[in-house]
Image 1 (cartoon, rainbow, N blue to C red):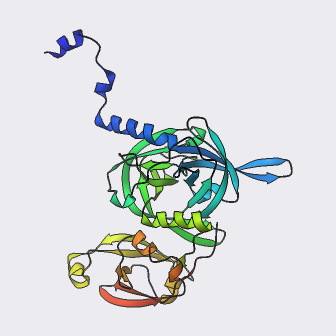
Image 2: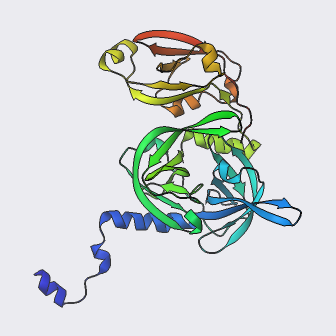
Image 3: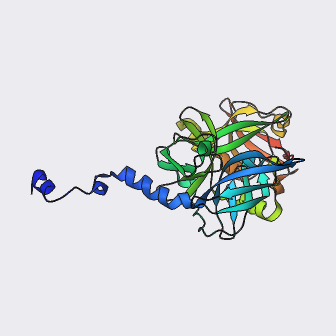
Amino acid sequence: MSTAAANETGPVDDGAALDAYSETVIRVARTVTPHVAAIEMTGNRRNGRFRVGAGSAVLFTEDGYLLTNAHVVAGTRKGRAVFADGSGTDLEVVGADPLSDLAVVRGRAPHVAPAEFGDAESLQVGQLVIAVGNPLGLSGSVTAGVVSGLGRAIPVWAGRNRRVIEDVIQTDAALNAGSSGGALADSRSRIVGINTAVAGAGLGLAVPVNSTSRRIISALLSDGRVRRAYLGVVSTPIRLGASEVVRTGQREGLRVVEVLSGSPAEQAGLRTGDVLLRVGSRAVSNAESLQKLLFAEAIGVPMNISVLRDGHLTDVSAVPGEMADWG
């Protein structure tokens, strides 16, 4: 049958004209939006409560726990969440971890089902991702884009102390003020990141949902804080050259782009340009592989680090300190 003949039989279904991309974004938006709340954090003063900050949060348990950014809840303990269906609940901060920019808040058990977490370790550059949040106070806003980069780092200041949020996801999905704490989902509607920052026009960043962030969430739920060992390097993953692969037995490493002043890394003699290969017996190839080794049990324990420096293999010994509370 010709197209003209087909058109004469009745109107064309608009849904049939949607391409696969649009269908995927629509499906993910419908699935994820109910799990994402707009939150407003408040403080007290003599003439009543006042707004401290606002953003988004993702419901991840049936009994009312939500995941958001530490910077959204900084300086406050209470707030309110409103879901896409109009239902709301008062919130209380359970715990926050400024180094990962993750925080857990709790409200009344909602009528909404919790979101499904995915694993950001499976993400690839160029993969479709969908951001859901409440930018500029516009609830339930959805933007789509791709993973532009992985393993990025965000330097942040807290007073006079400089820290780095590592291993973040870079995306070109549009993020704006109020997107912080919202969901970054894959094409199967699984939450693979928590949107954290706008780094420039067309550049958004999200904290990955992976084994390290799950461990952080567990610590926040149980203790309200995360004890961490502190090394003090800013690094980026690199692929080693063919000759280096033969010499080291590794294909990837972590290039040191900055050694923070006064840090255990500086005291151990690590330098900008060094390539970290192994910490103890474990190979390190991305920020998460290093972060996994820097929880409470590593504090004060000498750490042998294998380094490729100016083409030569060398070992240094660093003693991580305890990351002081900040933020």
